[in-house]
Length: 87
Image (cartoon, rainbow, N blue to C red):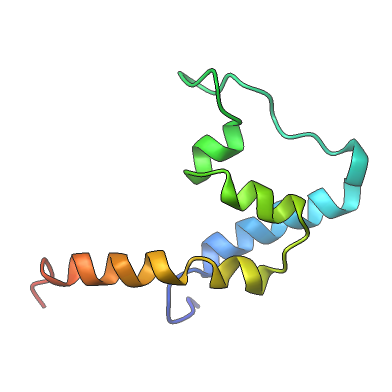
């Protein structure tokens, strides 16, 4: 079941990465570039669209803190899309 913001699947994936990062500590390594056509950015950053998620995981942010950091973007997206909703 999705939570009311629709983040449940994404947050579950973040939780998996976060737990693996915590379990393997110093031996954990992010995939090195290149990723597809991007040669100058961390592949996880490319997939997530920003370095903020990776940095939050590295700094030990809780899942609640990570989810809360998405609130402003979610609000802005909701406002933008509202004019395009027909029903």
